[in-house]
Image 1 (cartoon, rainbow, N blue to C red):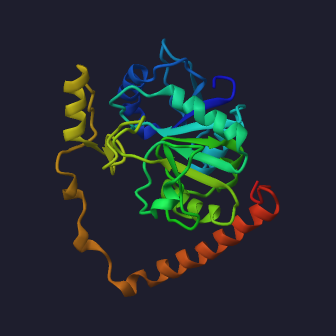
Image 2: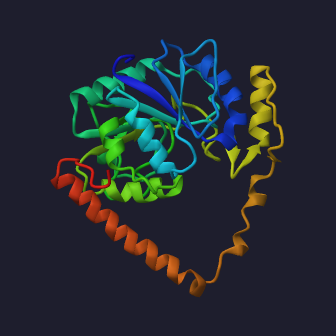
Amino acid sequence: MINRSSILINSCDKYSDIWEPFFYLFKKMWNGVYPNIYLNSEYKKYEDADIPIINLNKGNKLEWGGRLLECLKDIETPYVLMMLEDFFYEKPINVKIVEQCVDYLDANPDIMAFQFVPSGEVLEENYLENEDFPKFIRRKKFGMFTVIAGPTLWRKKDLVNITCPKDTPWAWEYFGSIRTWFYGKKIYSWKSMGDCIFKYDLEHGGAVHRGKWVGYKTREIENKFGFSIDYGDREIEYDWMKSHDFNQIPPFYKRIKSIINNRMKMIKELIYGFYLRITNGIRVNE
């Protein structure tokens, strides 16, 4: 695995306060030899005496997608395990399964990614059957959010192809998924919630939700692992539903413009994904 894959942690300077607890837990949970570990941010750096962190600082002139693409240019391995900085892992990571997925990608060029969290898709029973990858299910070809920011082992070439420079994290998951529909590559996700090898707070997507610490989870982690998180100036939210004001959705007539723009962008992304397929994955926006 070391020579064939790397770890890329996507972050930004304003989340640098989260790096220390992330790496503290990561070191406890990664039960294998470390591959190269890259940290994607604008200017700030992080160093750790125990793990080989390579800081990739790309400045603040690029959108999230552009910064990701620039980082991928600096990674030489054909596969990349990508994750976010607020995934506070709570149990040992079975590195042997990650290594097995590297072998799967080596042997199956028609697969672009293995996601290590369940997709939540409701699939027919016969769709779940897969003797070759028993812990995984194949994502629906035309499913929504088939591209996720959760821990995923990517074929780097395919990750580059489905990422556009102007992507925000949301646009990357939403429109990146549409780009895969006619791309011609398969995506697999972890089958069962109960035995996830990357266990973190999936309900909120991590230890930080909408810029605030998920207080009940971070306190639970502190008690469980016996260390203290420096909360700094970041707000702590204990009742995360308070940040969801469902009565503030604009009326339909105020959303017409954005709805039309999104539908037009969907068509554009479908054409782009089809183009990628017929050109065998040659990017058109580099």
